[in-house]
Image 1 (cartoon, rainbow, N blue to C red):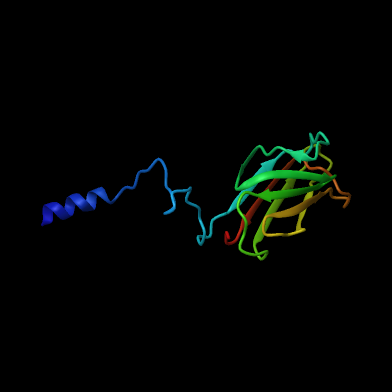
Image 2 (tube, rainbow, N blue to C red; image 1 turned 90 degrees about the vertical axis):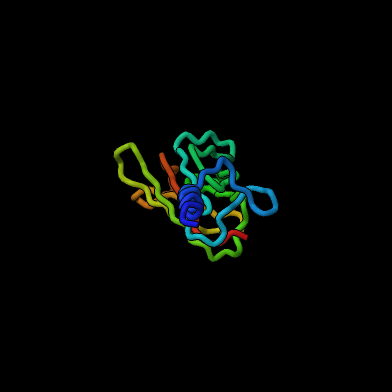
Length: 139
């Protein structure tokens, strides 16, 4: 028994997998853990006026809308259970004229939220770099 137990114990000490699926066969998602359910980082200073912004990198974000100067709508890949989720945001301005402030969220739904960025003089401004993360329960 001790030899069998040791072999089973050794095999269970490391879990290696290329893909983890849900019981229905789809991609497994975090639902109750306290990890970020979505995050994104993008450069908003080179906004081309197209109405969309391309994230430099993201997770759980389907798209980022640019609806006005200093205002972005973050569209989520997966809906949240309710609108009581927590959002953090950070904005950075690079030209030496001061830092920008990220405010929000506003316009909160279970599938999107808006953040706005302002310069230190309180004027709305497109920041060079914007980051956001969302914490809460997926639907």
